[in-house]
Length: 265
Image (cartoon, rainbow, N blue to C red; front, side, top):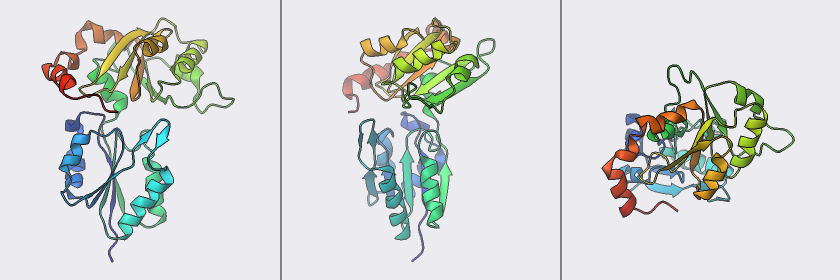
């Protein structure tokens, strides 16, 4: 039997229209679709009626499937001759564990391709009216994972470098650890009054964004009951949201969709 192919496809950050043409084409052709919790679920309507749809979604405290089980699932289906789309929120290689899945496919001789997706790291700030770079304000941006506990004895993140490199700082998946992360950044040299924003369910009809400072943004997130998925942006570019770049909030369909569709659980 001919071995099937595995396609690691980035679904984009929330707006289903942001998937690439190649990603959408492969999704329509797939025998099996293994999808994550944060994909735009409208995309599943693009799958073939006879396609096997498997929810491998992970939540911060509960995993539907462990990563090793997902790897085995991809390999097993491909060895049966199935073409498998692994549909992942954002981009498969940006905190998406796509590299682990690619290595598992390589180990078992499974042909695979990677289809990059629009990353939430820059798309969610864009939908909140925050350009990560702006002439005269920000010439660089740094993206860090927020799920690592910065209080542990050895961190893989150099907070001193992040605090002092300049430009914007983007913190992904950092709601729970936001107080400790911002404290670390301020202790390492970040101005406590640097503008900051926290954005919940970015690039969806349920998007909420709140503005504060690096020192206050964790408290604001707590007071407004921000829940994952959420992204925090720290930097002078945050001011551009209130200066008039907050385009998505002004779309009438956003308000309508919020009323008709409850936020995902």
